[in-house]
Image (cartoon, rainbow, N blue to C red):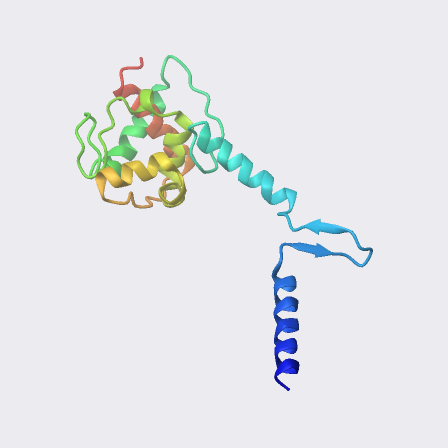
Length: 165
């Protein structure tokens, strides 16, 4: 009787191990390895490429900058800064609640700045550079509901603050 129970448990264990394996056998006898769909791989690759390129994560894939500065954007960007950003960021290099803005346009790509402005929650969760800032400042940047157009204006104001004419 013990032999039958032992044999049954061994058989159940073998079936369990086989069922939990990575490989699947089809009805034709070929073996396939479980993989992610290619569409998911493409999305991950694009996001990782943007992170690796220093552009952050978000809708902003490419920003075209011009010299001289667009003065109307600078003015609108200052208005957005005064209303939504100045309570946490100074225009100097001094850290307040968040990091100071002086030199930010030379340290960061414009896409990263705009993605951080418009997509702060995701950036703080997934972008390594944003996470470093969070560790430094110890305060999460709140979602200010800044539109992409307003973020572009703020970027132009940041460029002006950094001495671009």
